[in-house]
Length: 81
Length: 162
Image (cartoon, rainbow over all chains, first blue to last red):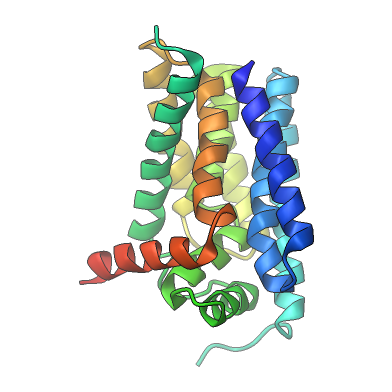
């Protein structure tokens, strides 16, 4: 199945880039691609209606973590002018 | 019926157009939605990229936007057809609120992608093509070169805001 192979290869490639990138903030977009690929592979490996909930929970959770890492790293909440 | 590799590439193009159009329309490159998105944009700019493109990269990282909506809609249509896609749109809406995002890019992207993916399944494509296609599409924006992706997005944003 080409779709699963494509998703798995992209996940592995981007995981390497997350490790190789030195700048913490610039790691996060690569990590975001890994989250996309894992969400896709969840559904490709477990094709069932309940997997919809698993995909949403995993993706929203990983995004919230990235959001938290980025916001903490940048110094927390700042009021916009 | 086309070969699977070709279908995945066509699906990647369709997904790319869907999420970039909706994200730029909803103004994701305008400013960072949360402080983390702004910080990512500043780092991308320091690395030689464009600030407004960086805001969009940061916003995609920080909250489920139209790209996430497209991926999750493809997954949902694969498992449960159009009703699955609409349930997923509701979950994306909740996800946006969890991530402190007041916008509607994710929900809109999820709904449009649901109908686009369903339409393509009627002409010989599979929903799995769109799952792999969307992962390729997000790779081109977030995973290859932040400098070039952010410049491209900044150019699109200039056209949108002109």
